[in-house]
Image 1 (cartoon, rainbow, N blue to C red):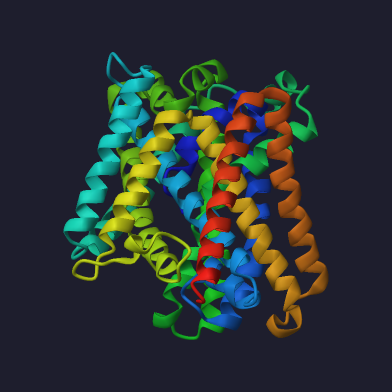
Image 2: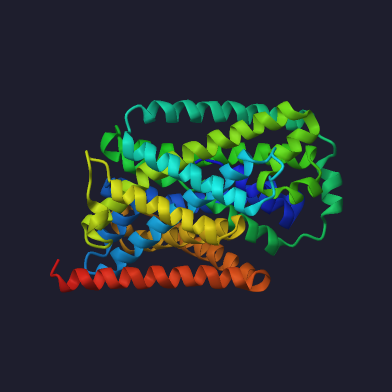
Length: 411
């Protein structure tokens, strides 16, 4: 989960709501907790490692379109996060270079890192687990160091910042909270390990809720340190690599290098994990007939064509979209997928032993988050809204076509 989220959302959040960024991050975590409720209930009930796609397919067994639609939305949600992490990797990788603000340089580096992890996942997965662990533990240590350094070099106080940001609206805070939802994406991957898990009834909720809490805590501490130590103007001006630029101004080159290393490790582990896990889910969906059959083919048990397709689509998204539109598309997508999970949980709440009121609250909370992002796009970035809606139209058309093809084939 801590796969570069704070490096991605900090600059955009501060540019929109300033000192209220930590509050928005907390609210984003609460929205993620609402989403987690239905995932946990469905995960414990079905005990199916297919997670979102399998839950919806099994809850609505008579609707091929429903299964196809959730499959397409889930996969393109992962593709958007892959693009997001690659873009963030590139922004920090070139942040100390003369062409740091070159959009095309970022896109080129993002494509290169996607290609690198595509080849790694095609070549071999042996040893990747240990490398992933090393990257995760190292980035967490670096994040702790970053937090301590920023806190100890604070240039102002929260009350002073509040005085200067007293015109921020509640609506703006809620919009940013919804946008930050993608920074918590990943908690549902716990369910993919249900077959290897002891006592899933206890360990699924424990793992997911504790992961959400720890991620929120890390994000909040770093964001507080950043707004206290780094001038807002610097964060906004360098929002794609705000932490590195701010640390460089405070501590010099070594501080900037530490932040860059943390960002590269965080995004690398997220890219690798996303390519590995999501490609296998794409292959499973293709095997069911909702994607081209070629994507289900494996070479030495590795879904080579799914890996290549995901990587290519992520790079195309990097080429045509900005950091903000990729972030917002990812958040909306996972909000909508989580909304469908809440709907599925509501339908069989008597089987999952779910609270009706909590499930309804989750549904409307997630719906509100998606609507808020689209409302913000409509009022401030109508071109981005059109871009997002066109993608959804294409996804819906693709899922409808493959669900129809599957029905005609008599599957």
